Figure: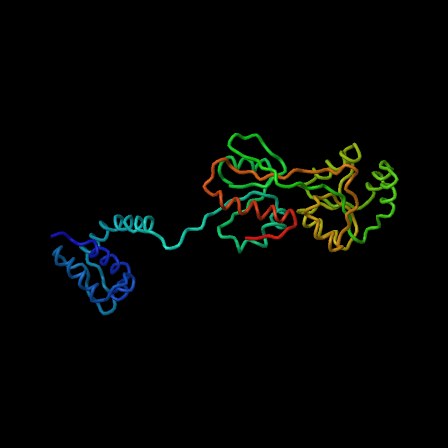
Length: 305
């Protein structure tokens, strides 16, 4: 005769909970069943394993010895049962995505609760996001800079213009006249004396815009350095001042009249936006769903989850 595994599981439950009734609740069996298992184990070992007190089952020295011997094996068996037990519900995949804060805020943020999978968003610089994607820490990145990493794929999906905007209370009459007349040198001098907003991370937008349209680097410092482009748009809304931002991120504010699109330039400065993914992934369907959502949002069409 060998001892039964269920006897040991019942013994452990009694030891952990302290009473027969609590052990019965934990094991989803009747209290007489718990008593039967314990009596059978005591008969098999030949030892009394608990002292029965009024409200507590107190383990004897032999009971403590058996508990210490069987605890680790039983925990491993329970872990194996949890790991390999067939689940009635499919586990949700977890997708890690890298993008700038503004892209997340204007595209994915409002749809998070409707996604059929878990989502982790990481904000950072493009170079770091590419490295994290290459190392498997991210599954998808949205970037304006493609790379040549052999394990990564960059798929262009949209373009953004870098444009000059102003708060709706800004008097742009002089600037409009100078630009319309082709007096760009005077326009540059005029702009240098205005109030400017920028972010520490996106000074490249201002520099690239200035070089493209005025043929020189900006030799002035913005008056206000704020955390992100969303802050710029909120600060400028129904106020005064200038900034240079991607057109997609200011579209709603322009349409609502809170800010004004002042100038795109004769030959607009444009960035190509890419989806960056690894060539091999187990989350292809989830990534494609995110990519379609982002495409729809950038194109201003209907978004479906």
